[in-house]
Length: 430
Image 1 (cartoon, rainbow, N blue to C red):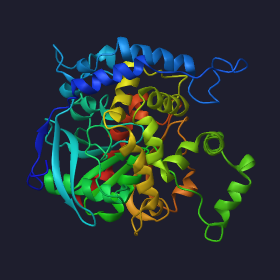
Image 2: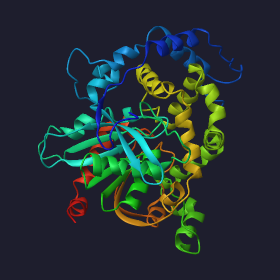
Image 3: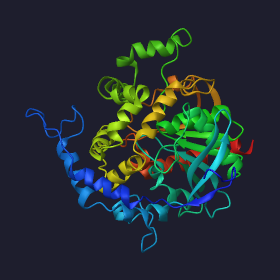
Image 4: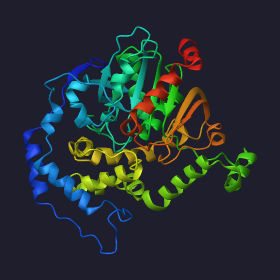
């Protein structure tokens, strides 16, 4: 789209070349696998992805998985449901009305954005921007678009759903210059919503990177972002000298915190001890990692499968093999490096609305939170109060980091409840 006009969307169909698919199969057939140590149990993931799981998935990827079936239109219409993708006979180009558009982002310059845009037939529909995370893609929204845009009950709030790809994720064109993190992504997505699509007032949903991008959007453009919802909210406690009672409650947390709050603290402590190595690597030397993960489908598969297992509520949801491999394909198609590099760009951002400031600065945009028990962190209310105008919170007994994938019906209900509230109605009108 190098020669296309600014702010003029072009319909897009996702398609990968035969050459890449053939090369992928060759690499899978030539793969070498590590050996498990004899005293490590079959369900012990403490050393990383399990060899037997990766071997099984690799075999299916090479000899059973059909990417072309994921691309093409199905023979019958999409059936809305909350079961896994194979049961729904879902296909990407049937489910998503996709586009690409070139925008001029202040502080950066021209950037092509990929997005899906599904409008509702309902005249009262609210524009909803859904932003993904890592290692996800715009496909995180595939189970929630239909129930959000066309709810069966006419009294239920409906939405126009817009799902952009973070540049470098899935079919999203990667940033060609350094420095493109959540703050600049937020500016690009604001242009998409307000200038390209004409939604001058809208609401947002974000998890993982999506939380950081939509928070930055609300900070930079509160006149457009009228309310936010998050299922991931990584703020820390306020400084002790500003909030001595909050700090005292934390110090006495074994006695003063609820079981829910204690479990959330345990989740983040476990993450810091056992899981954040990827974060250090991707935020410091992503390109070195990219040589391996971008060239080896087995390497990328192992890297991502471990995240799916560790961050999901696997006691209540198991990703079907097709779903796992389609998620992996979203990063394999660009050689993985652009998605890894986003971490480096995010942690290097400077400016008032950068990633770190987005969860350390208070602003008044009405905010709703959904808490899923296997999420890495959703902090106590007295932490959130220092950085957000929290007006809605829903706590669930199942679900993890990928709420739209694991328990879409719960997330959909929370979005309906929060964004149909009187608080949000007033915000959209005011």
